[in-house]
Image (cartoon, rainbow, N blue to C red; front, side, top):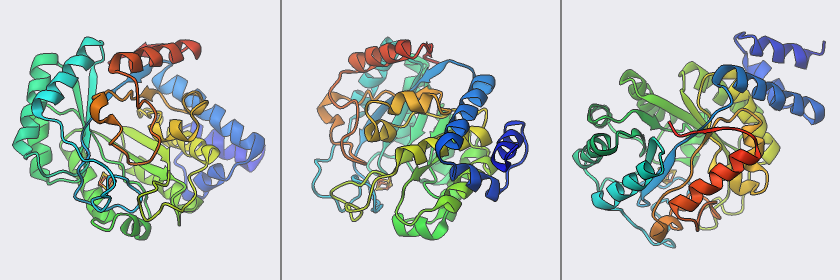
Length: 340
Ligand code: SF4
């Protein structure tokens, strides 16, 4: 048996992977790369099953106080119209999500201090009270007190992608923060018993296989319950506009490795990957370890202004149309959809 196959079998069987082992898997090419993706698909089937879970995303504010080099929402980008949904508009979106039978809502925004912690807490408790939805927050770095307030208000999950495990690269890409600060937030979220999601970007300028292997091991060490793995996509109004986008196969291999190191985690098909490969991104992700889809149900009047990267998918369809499309695509793949 080749070393590659024995490493793969070892990790599939629950062995503790080393950084060198993960790097070897990420370096796979040709038929070995396909073997890796198939192995992740098998692990996904035996650990979390064939069902695809749906989470509806509502992007409620595109204001951000931070200036991450790769992100179209960065505070220095004056080229996009900014918007904030009111509490009432957020509740209307939650009503739409509930009416479609979807049980999980993801409230996502830039780091926007306009909404007070109490306001966010009120929105969470109202959504729980009226619609009994599982509430996932994706609102960035905050204090332990804020996270605790929102948890007490009923928030169940929190997505806080770590983006890269390389502290230097992190500091360069996210000048307003540090990797340590980010990991502290993730640690707090774990302490508060959120279902915590992490994740990285593939193809970041300055990244290499070693960095990505550290990403995988970091997510395993922090016991991430969800992990978003998507490509870096250069946004034309950012300092990284001339950088090359992440590569599809590199993303799929990272996704597959993430499934191997986090067999029971929920791994979404990232929108960025669907933008990178509109034809095949969804299908290939679902065949490489992913088990969650996150249709965008942000009100159409503002959706096109939430541009972390350009050419987002799902820009023009109403929430109903987005959901119908998701159902059709799942049927075509012969996978069943669950809305829990
Ligand atoms: S990545 Fe997040 S924190 Fe950074 S600029 Fe974009 S929205 Fe703001």
